[in-house]
Image (cartoon, rainbow, N blue to C red):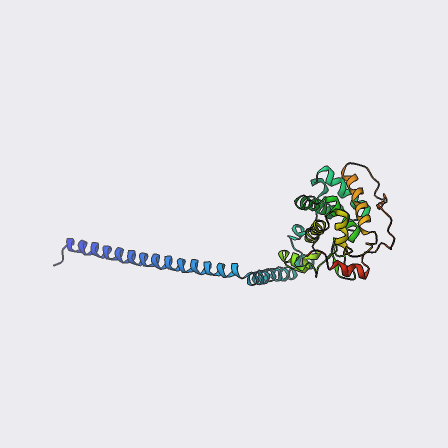
Length: 286
């Protein structure tokens, strides 16, 4: 006959067996989860290594992901009847080439406001270019007002300007000649990004000045007239604008319509994009 003590002993053994069974299952699940996490981590590392070594693949995936997200955003907005929002991008302002003139120091702000009035362009994007000219000019040891003067003469601060022979952007860089310089910025289409065009243009200008030995002759190289008898007054016009900008930077209150007085009058029409000049431009420093 089974006693109460036997029943209690049997129950204790059953509890111990169940506890052991549950513990074994838990340990097994823990081991499996650890192994699974290790495999997932290894897979993630492998994927990251592949993507880090395959820039094109990474860019394609990023573009596809962004495209999918934008498509989803537009579809949701259209479903809600908001067509304008569907085309909007909240980060567009972050991509804008613009700076509040009040963020510049007094010297830069004076130059930005004067250029804005003289060339009838908005002060915010001009302020960004002035700021960049000071930063890049300091690194390249080129006067920022000379950089801005070249932009004024070359494009009138139109970032989308293009000459008949292919000079593009603010500083009218011959993109097909200096395509190697645009590689670091993603390719030749960066010629129409104002800041990129400025940086590449300054790099070309610096090389031209170093090759020529002085600024005036360097400008002749820059415009592609180093081997020609006449640069159609290009260097003189740039230097005249440069002097005006230096005066403004120094604190002089010059009217925006102050005429730039070239160092010497050009003997030929002031159009440095004449075919023979522009073709010579392909010989400038690469």
